[in-house]
Amino acid sequence: MGGSDSPTVSVSLSGPTDIPAVLKRAGIDHVSVHDRRILAIYQTAIFNVTTDPAQISNAQTLKIECWETPIPSHADDRSKQELVQDFTDVFDSAEDY
Image (cartoon, rainbow, N blue to C red; front, side, top):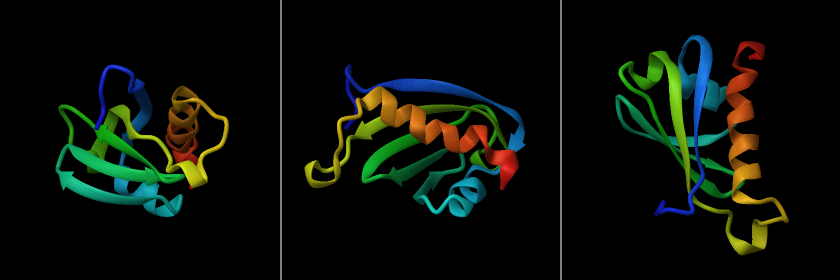
């Protein structure tokens, strides 16, 4: 999982955000690993989402890494970076939920 070719992005949110709630409202499956880390499955890709120092339920900054790309039968022509950007767009529109 992960590796040197795994794209990682940092996301700054406009204010404290409950990341599990945003993912739930967006219909994105996720599993809480601990209070500062969550794994999310988006379009069959696996994302590692971490925050520091705040808890994932009250985050203002996120580090998002694409650990696994979509399974081949569900993949399209998007690059890993494009997939990460699509996933991070969920947080950009968090206020819309």
